[in-house]
Image (cartoon, rainbow, N blue to C red; front, top):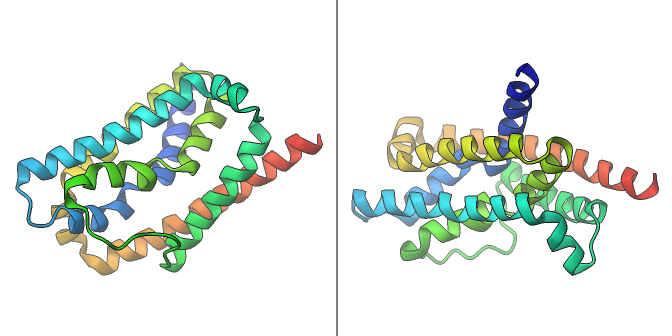
Length: 196
């Protein structure tokens, strides 16, 4: 039981850092500005549902997807780690690479759901967790991280007002450094698996 709890807590922490719903708060608040409370809550649900569907699909069918595409986990680790590192650097430095500034309020939930919440980093993390822990622990961790993310997005406007833009920005940069560090660990593990 203790192993289950510690495994779920570790997996939850890893997923929560990579999903980084705090970073999504100012973006989500801006994209849903002017919408009714009901519509904002609907977009929060859509964002979490999109991210959740992708993570659960890769949790269950990861090896099948790899076999169809002729990929191996180490190659995906390295590719995903590189992309995750770039994402972490964007978060830490406050730069944007290949993003569109056009507002899309009607599809805010989808845009936040992927690639912002569930991008290559989250997918890679889910697959690594499934390799290390099987299905149950990552499933529980994904569920908990999605619930926490939904709560944060549900109250995004309130959080934005309470924290202020400066604090939200600082938190995003700190989480960016953590994401970059996790990415380096993933890349290193992939390289070691390939040469080992």
